[in-house]
Amino acid sequence: GNSVTQMEGPVTLSEEAFLTINCTYTATGYPSLFWYVQYPGEGLQLLLKATKADDKGSNKGFEATYRKETTSFHLEKGSVQVSDSAVYFCAPRFNTGNQFYFGTGTSLTVIP
Amino acid sequence: DGGITQSPKYLFRKEGQNVTLSCEQNLNHDAMYWYRQDPGQGLRLIYYSQIVNDFQKGDIAEGYSVSREKKESFPLTVTSAQKNPTAFYLCASRLAGGPNEQFFGPGTRLTVL
Image (tube, rainbow over all chains, first blue to last red):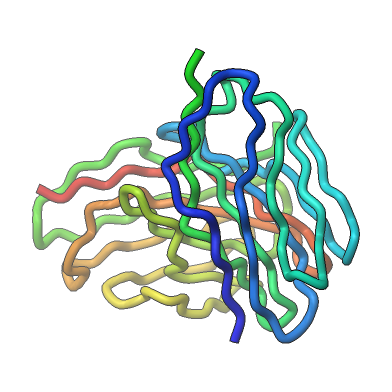
């Protein structure tokens, strides 16, 4: 069946550190892949997306590459800022049905 | 400005009362969704609708009801049958077809006393 597994948090980093949040999925086909970010008390915002193998999504210094061979879509940022503190969700959209599957979320806190 | 609005931001109700959460979008999106989020947890799908006058149950539909009489509106009713209704509720919409992303509203925090 279809599923998504996301790295558990919480993650605490110092400002300017490198960030990786792992996300892997299982699927019968090739889903579209999304990362969303949620700031405290708010709804989710799209951070980036990739729709086919080897595509790289990028936004605000964050990047993620659609890796078909490892069924992964890891989120990375080279130098985090305090303003990046939020919860990050990996969300594949599988080709069967019209639903998104959300990972459990990874809470990131960046300290000065 | 186009977007999704949810009202109210905070809602308090007594146990045993039904309550309706509003979700409106002016993005001309076909599909709309309701999710529930509990502290430290991911999103769980309650109901979704791909077209007016049609909707499907998600993973946790018990104790909830919805309607989709207009394209722009998708209200969620939390009934007294929902055992643990206190949560953060998120509404989302998307343009049908293709790898289009979901757009989310700001959420409604429901507290049942």
